[in-house]
Length: 360
Image 1 (cartoon, rainbow, N blue to C red):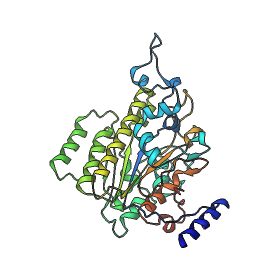
Image 2 (cartoon, rainbow, N blue to C red):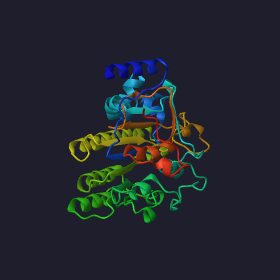
Image 3 (cartoon, helix red, strand yellow):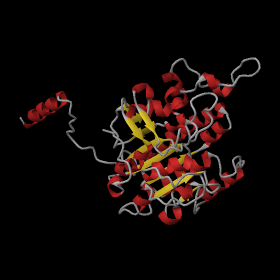
Image 4 (cartoon, one colour):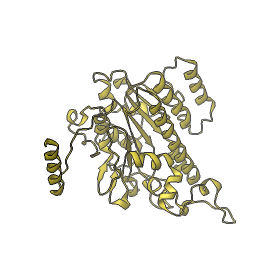
C-alpha cells in the first residue's frame, strides 16, 4: 500500500511538471578530470569538416583527414571519437550541443588557456589571470581544497606537459604533485617511472616546453595503478598545438588519440577494485576556437566563437541521460562538480564559485 501511494505521488508530481527523486544516488569515491586543450565543439559534436581538409594540386584530400570523412555528423563524430560517442554518450551525459538547444561556455572573456583553467579549477573567472605567464595562481583550486580534506590528503595528483600547469595548480602552496614538462613523473621511484621520464626526454622537443601527450598519459596510468589516488587530473594538449600550426589533419589525429587515451583510462579504472563502479570521469576543454576556415586555428578575446566549449561525464554519480537538451552550462561549474562527485561541497566553501553541473 505504501509503495502504491509513493507511485501515485510520483505520478502526480510528474504531471505537475515537478521532478521526483525516489532514491538519492550516492557520490563516487574517486574522480578523474581530463581536458582536451582547445578542442572545438564543432568537431566534438559534428566530427571532421571537409571545408577544412587540405588538398594537393590534384584536389586529393590528405590521407589523415580522409579517415574521418562521413555523410552525417553522427557518423563523423563517432569516427573521430568512438569512445566518447559509443560509451560516454550512452552511459553518461554530454553538454554543449548547439543543435540540441544547449550551450557550454567559458565566462572569463579572454578565451585562452590559463584564464580557462583557472576558471575551471577555482570555479570563477579572475581578472588578475590575464596571460599565460608562469605566475602562481592566487586562487584556491578544487584540487588544493580537496587535498586538505579528510580522506583526500596526499591523494590528489595532476599531469600535463604544459609547464605552466604547476603554477595554475600552485603546487608550491597546494602540495599537489604535478608531472609536467619533460618530467611526467615528478618523483620517480621505480624503473618504470624512470623509463617514462627518459622516454619524455628522448622524444623530439617539438614545442620546447614539454613532451608529447603519450608519456604524460603513461605517468598518469602509473600513478593510478601504483599510488591509487582519489582525485586525478590529466591535461592533453597536442590538439591545441597542431591547431595553432594550422594542421587540421594532425589536430584530428590528436583528437582521436585523446579519445583512445580516454578509453584506456576508463578501461584501467574498471579493471581495478578500488575504482570499478566507484569513479566518475569528467572530460572537457579550456576554450573553443574560431568558427571559420580563416580563424579556426586561433582563439582569444578577438575570436568570439572561442567562448563555446563542451563537457562530458560518466560514472556512478552521473545518470545516463545522454546528450542534454536545452541546458546551458559554464566551465566555472566544473570545480564544484569535481568535488560533488566525491561528496564534497566546494561551492558551499567557496561562495564565489559556480554551483555544480545539473547532472539530474
